[in-house]
Every structure is written in structure tokens, then in C-alpha cells.
View (cartoon, one colour):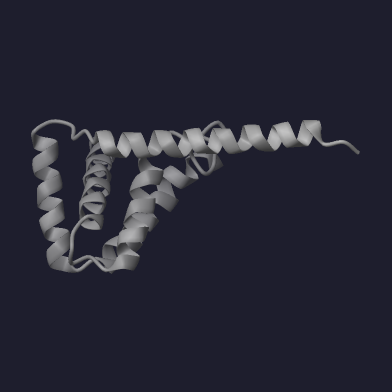
Length: 130
């Protein structure tokens, strides 16, 4: 059973990378690109929709929502593009873990911008005169 779980995790990792590659492919429809980028960004983000410390529900997004979103997005991408991207993803994983400094910079920028917006909101909340 543990080997089956590990194999499924490898497939999900490959599919997430394949979705990222498909989002950059010229023959992928725009709506599939948007969804693929959103899924890849969420999968790689350290913040979950439902925090993991909440019993049972904490792993709901990782175990059910993320794979369901991947399946939906895969159905939106043309089969030949997906096959090409999956092969590229498998090759990238065989060469070692792929690293994208651009994706890391974008994720960091989004979190910094979010933190700035929260700080601005808190500052306005505390300085508001009634």
C-alpha cells in the first residue's frame, strides 16, 4: 500500500510539472493555461486552502481537491500537447528535480505583495479615528 501511495505521489508531481509546461505551450487554449498556472502555483505554494493542522479536513485539499483540479485541467489540454509535456516532465525528473527560479520569484513576489496589503489594512484599521 505504501508503494502505491508513493507511486501516486510521483504521478501527481509529474502531472503538476506537465501542467506548468502545458501552460507555456503555444497550442494550449488560454483557459487551460490560466487553470494550469493556478493549479501549479497552488500546488507549489507553502500555504494551503485548508490548513493541515485541522484534523481530517486539513488534508482534504491535498488528497481530493488538488488531484480533482489536475484531472479537470488535463481534460482541457489537447492530448498530443499533454503527452509531449508529460514526456518532458518525466525527462526533467529523471535528470534531477527541476528548479525554476522565475516561478520561485513570482511566488515570493505574490506573498510579499499579500503581506504588504495585510500590513496596509492593519495600519488603516488601527489608525482609523472614530
